Length: 97
Image 1 (cartoon, rainbow, N blue to C red):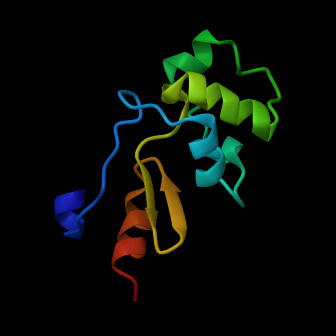
Image 2: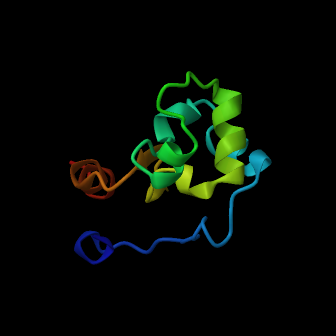
């Protein structure tokens, strides 16, 4: 996708280099972290989270402990954040108008 969009990206493998709780709070400031929760990940299922109603704070804390709970890729550009491989949103973000 990066080649198609012809963009340079700063990358961080947050499985190898997890985001701290403070970094996650800053990242999701003004956004609901639950919108970026990877509900399809094995970690989500193995933790029995499907039937739980998590607060934003609980979600952030879980993501700090288990980085696979954060949707990937997480792309931030022009003040927008796109989670997951949403090709149409990424194309619109990097090729506006």
